[in-house]
Length: 85
Image 1: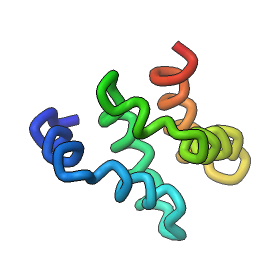
Image 2: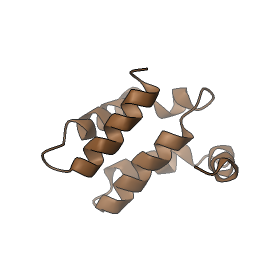
Image 3: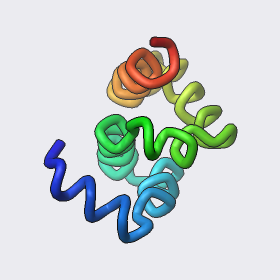
Image 4: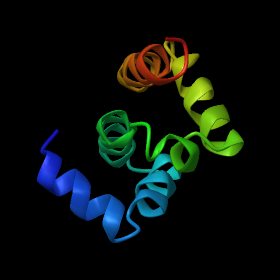
C-alpha cells in the first residue's frame, strides 16, 4: 500500500515477479501476491497485470472459496476493484 514501494516495484520490473508468486505452492506467498497486485494495479500498470493468463488465474482463485476462502476473498476484491468496476 506504500506508494514509494509500489513505485520501486514497478520501476524495477517487479510486476512479473509478483505474478510468478501466484503459482507458488506456499499459501502465504499467493496471499501476498494477490494483495500486492491489488495495490500495484493502476492505469499505468493495468495492461501488464491484467494479461489474459493472470486474469484467468485470479478468476480461478476467486472461484476457490470452498478450498481457500482467503484466496477467494482477495481475488474477488481484486476483480471488483480492477475488472468489474
